[in-house]
Amino acid sequence: MIHGLRSDARFEIVSAVPSRVAAMLHAGEVDLGVIPSIEYAFGDYAIVPGVGIASRGPVGSVFLFHRVPVPEIRSVALDTSSRTSAALARVLLRDRLGRDPEYRVAPPGLEGMLAQADAAVLIGDPALYHQGGEARLDLGEEWSRLTGLPFVYAFWAGRRGCASAEQVSALQSALRAGLASLPAIASTYNGMGAGRSALSERYLRENIVYTLGEREGDGLKEFYRRAHALGLVPRVPELLFHADS
Image (tube, rainbow, N blue to C red; front, side):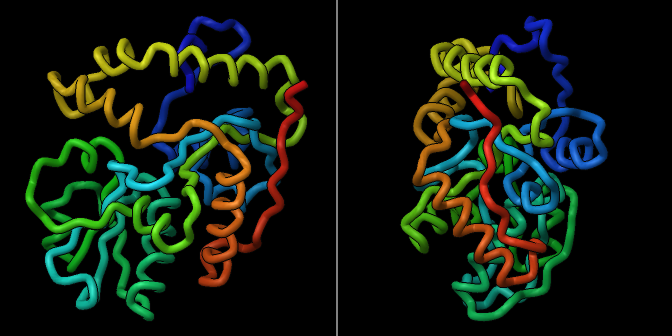
């Protein structure tokens, strides 16, 4: 999504984990951020159209690892890196269990998380490249099974009017450039260690959907509706978009 933007004088790129990006956007420290989708419900923002991070089935990098059978889960350790994945787990477990387990916030590290809880939500590289044999649920797959809709994890958003049509077009072009350069991106990304370029490229091609289409919008609305019903967000926000023409 940011392929080539670092050399574009119109943008200064700041890198941080999703939760930190959201905090910077809420504080006005950045104009636009690739924010976890749940954060959109906590601000007065507009979305850059057509660009996002979503899945239409297994996502491969957002898992609920569990050391007891799912119906017996009583406690869950949540990765602090993204509130969206934590909220998704809460929504899915409420539907699956008919109750809420005890949730505990924990730094990412599966062994430590499972030492203190029956299950753990782990995202990103630690989840994608984890080679252990622990039982797990792919939360993207579970969401699509439950709703029949894609799940949207993140997208570009910022305060209304902060991005011109030209800047929106540049962000959309950056995505197209990135999609055309997936082998190079995967080969230069070390992730949790070198030698995983084939896995990284397969993940980028097969698990992630980068467009925000009508179905992705429906998935977003359904997520906000369910999250609001559980008191996880203050409202079900309207989807507003920056102008792209």
